[in-house]
Image (cartoon, rainbow, N blue to C red; front, side, top):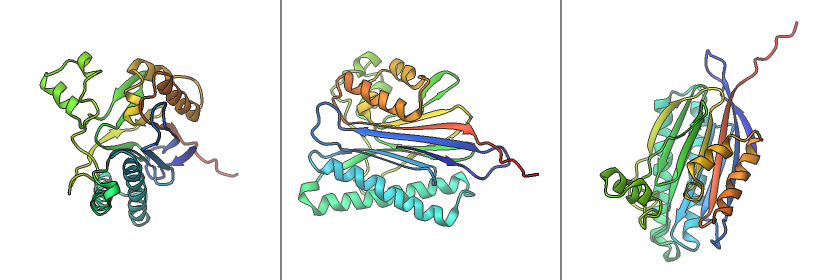
Length: 269
């Protein structure tokens, strides 16, 4: 899917955000435990990668994006586009708390869903700012000035080992702990959504993805694919296709958001 949303408040020219999203089961999995959702009117993008095996992972990721979208939508109906970033932060954490509680309760009361949970990465797009939040190892990247940047830091055992110097970057690529997350939605009574605010500039390209993409496509390939002179939805399709061509060992999901300056309406004479 592709959609366009325009941020409306700012004394500077507002940015127009174009979105594209795609999820795919991959080459080896029988079920898709990823879920994505984009609401251009809210300027909200959500991506979740479920855990818990058959059924559980699918339920957890679907609950996360659905409940968070609904919660943020209710808040937005009251606050609107004028809300400052600090208020948006509180709204996103509140939405996370609601989703976390519901997923945890469902897992505790339904034995078929016991132990389920999900990673989460999201972004709230505003006139000149982007608020990125994540839990687990789903990621957000940005392409700016011909450079690919990773904006999130995995909540994973592998990342902890890297930070401690216990393994090298090369060893991390095939680490047996690469899929073990240290933070997830729906696993414990409370979970903190790590959030960071970034400036937004015309030409920025943001990418949210599950590890089914980041594990199968190198940074060099990501940069090349994101730089192709094709439409946003085509870029999403290319990313998923290359992840599958490289093995497709997991479900593959991606959300793209591209910033440009909104055209100023002409005054009728």
